[in-house]
Image 1 (tube, rainbow, N blue to C red):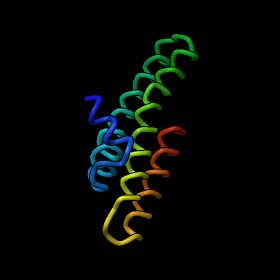
Image 2 (image 1 turned 180 degrees about the vertical axis):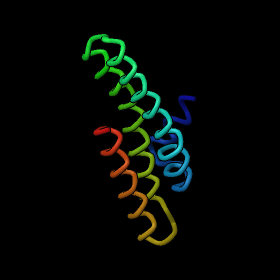
Image 3 (image 1 turned 90 degrees about the vertical axis):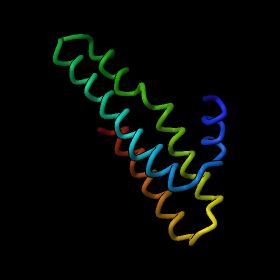
Image 4 (image 1 turned 60 degrees about the vertical axis):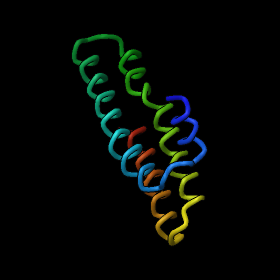
Length: 100
């Protein structure tokens, strides 16, 4: 597990895996779950600080996913436009999951 995390952090995975699987699939599911917990917490009348904490729990994963895409794009052997598009998509995704 630690080796996989290190490989993601260093960009030692394929760009497609980093973008589609790690970021858009797993990252979106994790963030949707955390947002659901946030809404349940608010609906239950629990402290708002707890709801905010649930919202930001995935932040370390989000940073890892963003860095995995960013660094994998740097190693990408294909067209630079594909790498730049993947970086832009990951950055927009990161901003979106932080705000929503």
